[in-house]
View (tube, rainbow, N blue to C red):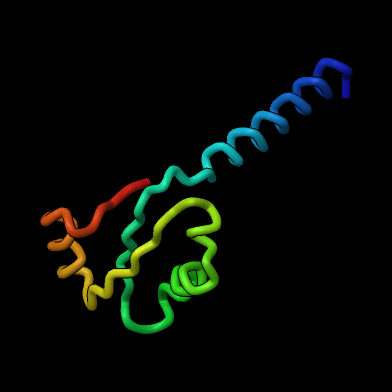
Length: 84
């Protein structure tokens, strides 16, 4: 590996770490998560229970919506959002 490639790889790695940290910082936003009955959203339940959302400045709200059609209706009525 040439010196230029090594420097370029280091710069790219540094930018990746910097950007991922910046994107992960919460801005006091509220995230509404469609929660289905069962174990499908277990990771979200654990995050809320353990306080991971608040630790990063995000308020997580679990909304129990029992089916996909009702979830789609909630999105259309602005009771839930689809984001990246």
